[in-house]
Length: 382
Image (cartoon, rainbow, N blue to C red; front, side):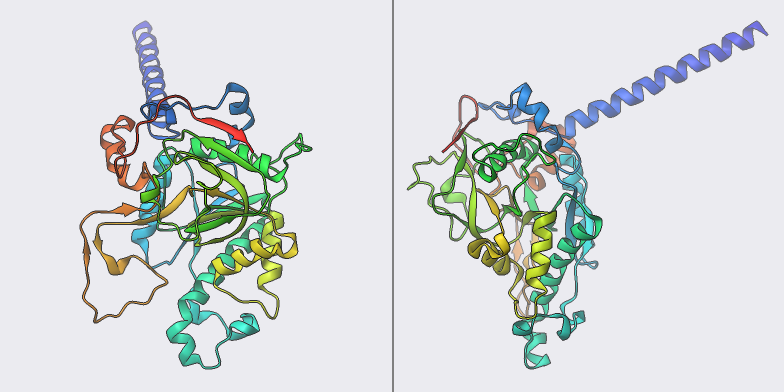
């Protein structure tokens, strides 16, 4: 009997040791692959102080400080969904899927009157995919309203971002608070990004400063792409503003193009639905959002970041697999891309996924040669 008791004790002790080892292993993996820090970039350090780190800790959670994260994906593009889920997992966040809408399944009667083509044949050839994209993004806004989320962020399924995205967003969150409330009247926050904004345009292919608006500068930032690697149209003139080429700016946006990623507050989602479902307004989704930002429709308040934090990824392989909006000629010659690329992202998560999984964060590389920076990231208001 004594031997049996001793055997049970030994067995339980062994199970306890195994359980502790297992939990420590999970913790180690989470620390290694999730929430990487800019301190791992040579010559840079994470400039978040312990005080601000506590204030903005929600930015580092599984929804990046938003109510939910979403990705728009056509159900037949399982390849894109697998890839974006993998990249999100490595970065330490979770995305819910909004199924992309087939444009021809959207009734003419549900499209604002100035957007309905006079002939279905014309619509089928020129309009179908634009309508589907438009409706998919409206479904994102509707999801925020339906679930009464404080905010939500949506990205395209071919989006890419930095390995150090969470570090970037801590600074952007602080900048958004300042830009949306320069007088610092608000002292209690539900969102780490501030309380008085409708849209955060964080992934775009063009944007502009609103005149005489406050700016928040993130200087000496090793994740800022050099000017010759920025593929953004209508980019803000940062040089005329006196900012150097290693500075990211958070600002009141007077407009933007493309929707690699953006966030809406609950109030912003309500305004988008009201504007877009009125009887007369239609435009491709990014042009419609651009108009709302530029005209400040319904008091729409937009905050942007330049250079953008999200860009588009193009994998190696046939180029006709890239876009689900552009129409491709089935008889056209298919070209091959020998190497994947991501626009405007220095430390691409997609391109570094294999390095991180096999070798860890010390193996992270840049897409192109970049200047070696020394000293800490600096932030200031202007």
